[in-house]
Structure formats: structure tokens, C-alpha cells
Amino acid sequence: MDLCWHEDPVYESDGPGHGCCKGCNERFKRSDPLYECFTCDGEWHSSCVPSSPEDLYHPCHPSHPLKILLQGPSSYDDGKCNLCQRKLSTFLYHCKLCDFSLDMGCAKNPPPFVVDHPKCHEHSLTLMARDVSFTCNACGTHGERNPYVCLPCALMFHYDCIDLPHVININRHEHRISYASPIRPGFHVCEICRQDINWRYGAYSCSECQVFFVHSSCATRKDVWDGVELEGTDEEEVDTTPFEEIEEGVINHFSHEEHNLILIEDVLIDGGGEGIHCEACSHSISFERYYKCMMECDFMLHEECANLPLQKRHALSTHILSISTSKDNDNLLFNCAACGRLGTGFRYYDGEDIVLDVHCASLFWFRHRKLHPHTLFLTTLDRGTCVGCDKTKTYVLGCIECEYSLDFQCATLPVVIKHKCDDHYLFLRCGEEKKDSTGRYWCEICEAETNPEKWFFSCYDCGVVCHIDCVIGDSLNIKPGVSYMNEMKIETVVNDHNSRPLCSSCGSRCKYPMVYKYSRENIEGYYCSLYCTWERNE
Image (cartoon, rainbow, N blue to C red):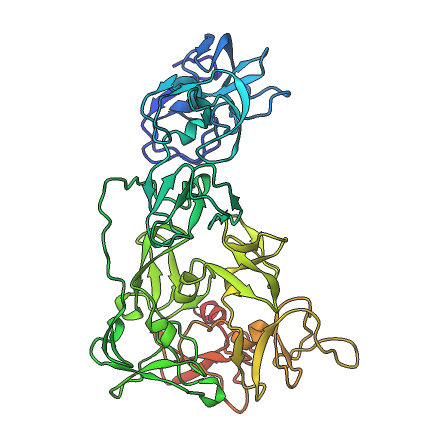
């Protein structure tokens, strides 16, 4: 097929496409119909290419015909489609007199001139075929072109807002939320972007919580809403309680149904509980209340971990997350999608590709006044650089008042921890710390210099300073005693020797709180980290 917009023949195909469309630069979906050129290997969405080089008369711009442009927007154009505001691709329709541009999607499928039954309003709406600056009554945000208007009510709406869903589930709240315009008068803050909501315009709210409000544009983001309208459907009541209470202080937990657990209170385990770890989070139990098996099992759960719900929602997935234990999975070790740490405890899974440890699955905001004066929130899924470790990560919690971001790995660090390098507890800190006589800072564990501007652990009594990695290593979420096979038996053990063992891979002394002991054919040794384990056995 010879077409005006390409010098070589192109052919229609049912896909699947490879890589990205040369028109809009977006990746192909498996079912997308497309055009392809065997000469240059170019591929285009069918909706991204012009079907005819003739002038186009469009209802949104009736005053002049639109000319087709085959080489992208002109230099004086703002580069966006006047209707959908998306970035213009290679092919577009344009009016030079009015500086009016449409992408192929809006040109081929023009919006209706009149909408008789919009979801956002009780009256019919008419498309205003001219550029006008306005505030959308459905979402409360600014618009510049072609609103839908209700003349009797003097209201204006974005095209994308005329069919806002009425009842939805979002991944930032456990209950359904409903749309209303206007909402209840008062001062409200959006629970997603943390910006003010003008109650005179439309927004979503929770009828059960009364104080939960979300901007319309935030609630219907693709990373927040699953795209399902729930109006007219009954809400399913799901019991997410993880245990049955037998009597006061005694429960039967779903993860240990064979025996009951009893609550242990007023406990302070000397040494930070190096030998006692929670089955759910794998962290040590020291001064927290916890549940213990009433029989001879060594099964223990922090009280907080015992109350983790069977299902929950989280900002990293639009699906419901379900909890599972290590015995429910073929892979003992799992990688948390949020913090990147390997773990052996309970995990939350969304049924597709998101797996979270229990700490990341419970993290929606971060607050620690000694580390930062403001509360941090996961407002978007944009990449950012973490202040705690100075690394750029996919998911970060940000401060809405200043440029301060934390990744999930730093935000889930223990604030208080016990380490054998000091008799006291170590506290997570940042900023200046006591220097030695040379004016420099030294880690008590590895004896290397530290950067006091980054996060570290320190003892308030002794002034001891330690690198975070030296205190927690790579085994923060891995329980001691857990073993797995990789052509040999490898077991995580507490590094409590009088002298540090030598790593069989890198040859250095094992400095981390846990090491990996291996045995094969009567040969035993140690690896200082999972990295060394993999390097040695690849």
C-alpha cells in the first residue's frame, strides 16, 4: 500500500508490534492493529496515521479547514493537541490562522457536539467550539480550550470530566469513594497529592470516614484507580481479620493454626533479641509486645505483625494485595518491589507482579521529627533521589513543603536497633555528629570514614557512629536459621563469633550482623553477603 506519509510501501498488520510506535512513541499492546514497513522496519498504530491527505472539517474548529502536517508540529506551536492536551506526534491536523492542532486520535474520533446524559451534571452539555480559559466544575482545575458548557447553570467541564465515574475503589483507601459536586463545605486536603481541595467544585469522598477527600483528577489517575465503575453494584464484605481471639491475650493466627499464641507483655530481651525473630517481618524482637506459641514451637509474632490484615490496598498497585507466608510459596526468599530487599517473612502479593514485604506494604507516609520536620507522602510514582542514601529510586516518598525525598529502603529502616558493637541501643540519625581529634568521622564496625551529612546509626550515650549498611547488612528481612539449597546447604546465622569469619568469596572479614554458612561434602565456610554467595556459585 502506497501512502503519502511514507516513502516506502506499508502494510496493515494485526501485530503484535515491537518496541514503540514511530508516530506517538508509545509502546504497542499485543492486540494493537498497526501499519509496518519492511524496508525501514517502522511500525505505527493504525490510529496514529492519517487515512487521507485531504483537508479536515472538524466540529471543534468549524471556522476553517484543518490541513494535514506529516512532519510534526510547527515551530510556533505549543506541541500539544488542543482537545486532549497530549503531546503531538509526527502526524497531525493544523490550522495556521488559529494555531489550532489535533492529533490523529481526536481528528478521527471527534468528541460529540452534545452530550445528553453526562455523569457530571443533570443537564445536557454542549461543546464550545472555541478556545476559552475556564475552571472545570467537575475537577476544579484550569482548562484553556473547548469546554463542554451548560448554559442555564453557567458551568464548564473538561471533555475528560463529563463521564467521571460516580463510585470507585482507589489504592490509597480501604473503602469505596463517591463523586459529588460540590462537596461538603470546609477545608479539605487531597489524600493523594496533599494539596488543598476547593469544596465548590467536584471531588471524591468516603462516606464512612467523613474526612477522606480526593481530587477528581487524582482519584482517576491510572496508577490510582483500576478503571472500574462500581455504581449500582453491591460492596462485598471481606473479613480481613488474621486471627480468632480465643480469650483475652490468646489468639489462633491464620499462619499458625495448629497451635494458639499467647501475648507476652512487659518484655525487654537483653542483647536486642538476636536469637528471637518475628515470623512475619523477620526483625528481632527486643522491647515490643509479641505473641508466642503456647506449645514448644519457636513461632513468634510482633503484636503489630499479628494484626496485619489478610488483604489490603497499596499505592504501588491498583489491585488488592493478599498476604501469604513463606510456607505458602515455592520460593523461600522474595524480593520486595518497593525497597528491593530480600526477605523470608510474610509478603503481600497483588496477583500480577508486585510483591511487598510487610513493612513496605504498611508504609503510606513517613514521619520522624529528628530526621525531617515535615511528613513525607507517596504522592506520585515519579523517580527521585533519596536524601538518606543519595540513590535515585523508582518509588520515593516526598515532602510537599520542601525538596526532600526518601526511598522505601530508607523509610523502613529501624529507628532503634541493637548491635554488638555497643552496650546501648543505636538510634537512626542524620546531620552533624561528634568528631574525633582530626575532625573526621569513623564507623565503629568497619573503621572506615563516614559522611555525617547522610544517615547513620549512633549511640546517644557513647557517641558511637556506624554506617547503616554495617549495622543491618543485607539480612534485615531475613530470619536466622532459614536455609535454602543452591547446590549446597546455605544457612543464615548470627555473626556472634569472638572473631569475624573470613568470607570464602571476597576474602574479607564478615562485618555484617548475619553471615551465610555453607556446607557441602564435609566442607564448611562462610559468605559475608548474598552478593558473595551468588558470585561464588554462578
